[in-house]
Image (tube, rainbow over all chains, first blue to last red; front, side, top):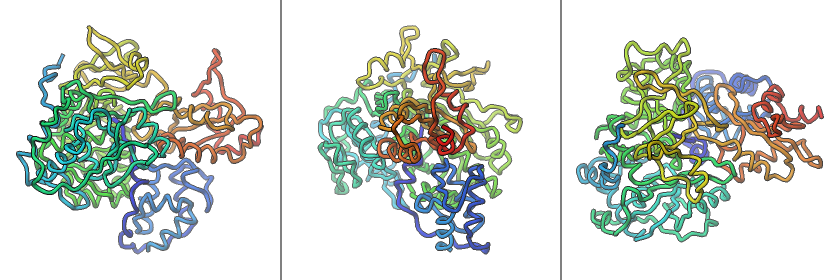
Length: 98
Length: 516
């Protein structure tokens, strides 16, 4: 049995706005850089590093999206992440969604 | 050998038609909350089957998470054609390769169209007027619904870079779906999430047992959002009772649940996983969650042996007591053969599979077909390439591969296919592709030697873009490293594993190039 969720996730339109924002701190680029480092198990991440060029894929991306939901109360989608794949741009996306 | 269902299992379309007649008002499909009843689904299927007419041969269908794809699947089968799903998100070149390798004669436009470059006649799946089509359409076309007739064509990874079409006959799908209805204990009360991409066979193990049991198949785009909070809310809102997930995705789900300290929504009674080895660490996490009432079923199967051939309850009410000790790193078994499956363990402990679910072979590839199948006691067996061990009570455990194939997000990948594509780039002199475990999941890695006159500085990015235009995402390596040369075996062939071991510690391609 075999399956791929990547194409499906990439092909689906972005879902609606995220869930209500939590009471936590606002998204900062350094916070997202730290998140990338933890998930990718690599220190080689800066504000403009592309998650998918650092070896991230749709599976590992779910860990970033879960961490974003936990830390910032914003439920972004894989499609959102594809459009903002660096810590700098993802932090902007989080700020916009709050 | 347990083979008594061979030849006696009713055709899938017959099973679907009988189910629809028994449950006309029940929900067959639920799409973003909108219900298609069994009666309506049958009308849509019969209407499209009628428009397909006596059209033998393969028909390309855009594979999307929509009721329209399911209607097209059933209509093609009802009309005696061969269903060939193609993901419209794949690069156009790949779509063309697939349609041509499968010998597609026509394409269905479900509202989503495949690439116009396929150049095939287009049949539109229109809106049938309610109440117009009749049940007789499904059997009145004089089509070849015989058990040996081909039902669908799906693709596996081929060493030449071309997708390798597997032809599955109607008997295989009928026998397999019947076993799966029993394995899943499906009833009319069940609601099964449609999760797998429609161009992989896992989607058929979601769709067909459900629609021949009178249960409901639930489509919801939030399930594919990549966000577990959204996924879990969807499962809860849609009252989903059965989930069939790639093991790699289930690993991530368990990580999320463990971090949140939550369990699955109450209605979920069965979680089916499969596609690669189950992590004992995630099983230990799962066991610590409030999951005791949920059946967790591990499954094994190949495209060439139709959906699932082996299964075992790993956790929950169907698992053996006292249960396995996952925390000490016990490897999860892949299961026992389903009732329709014949198994043998051949040379080098290779798992061989026979019985009605064995595919007809690879289309127009007699040599690959001959190599892929063995004959045991006069009967065909598919050579899985998987090494297994068997306990006295018949439980199989996977011990490794006999070739270099790798599972990436549950999909079998022949590294030679990715190498063939990379070698087609004008700046590439030599290439080795292999699998590596990175941040807890299997990933493809490529090592590329550039031609002497090539500019190596941006080559990794160029190659990635080059692949994205040609192959699906699962065939694009997570990391492409430019290296001065590859490691060869004593016989002069590229040694994939040794090349990887030599360069794995060098993370960034630019550093490697600078060393030259």
